[in-house]
Length: 250
Image (cartoon, rainbow, N blue to C red; front, top):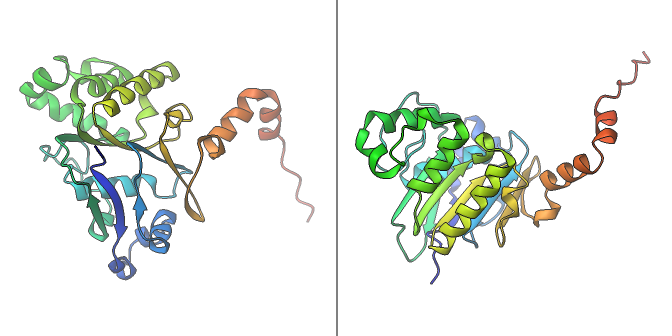
């Protein structure tokens, strides 16, 4: 059975009339040049430099799906501050034949607000988040508590930089959680800088840069290449990074 609940993201032509910054984001330019973004695996990663539009695209997909812009499930309706971009107005989601039974939008930058909303409704913490306030745990512990207690099979999950709170060993734990959930029919769309997470077997990886977006093999991603070079010879990399710039000859 094909468990891809989201199969494709299509950018509407109306984006051409937008007058905000989103029209010029590399990810938006790339979507305008191609016939949509295909999601062909249970786990799809968006990787690339800051400022290319990864988080903006994930936010738009999450909002178009019906999630709260600040994070949470489709049942979360709180709003701390309305700062989300308007890209969701210009995208169309091509859904699969089967309907996801649940889902969650996790974004590192507003996770505190989500945890506060969960505390505000005690039954949420008791039933679906492990029975312990996420605020009473470390940042990393609370992230894992969410993954292990709230995420289930046959759900659609959008994660924005989940590695922000996780040590390398906890990122490996997350890989095991992802595997178990994928085996139960879950689908994930994840923006990340982590070369550990993107090692997930069979994952589809799109890399973004100033020139746009392209599908990329794991070992060809810039995150993997730079991390490998640094770990293989940190002294050489530090010498290069700390080198004094040449003096102005003028």
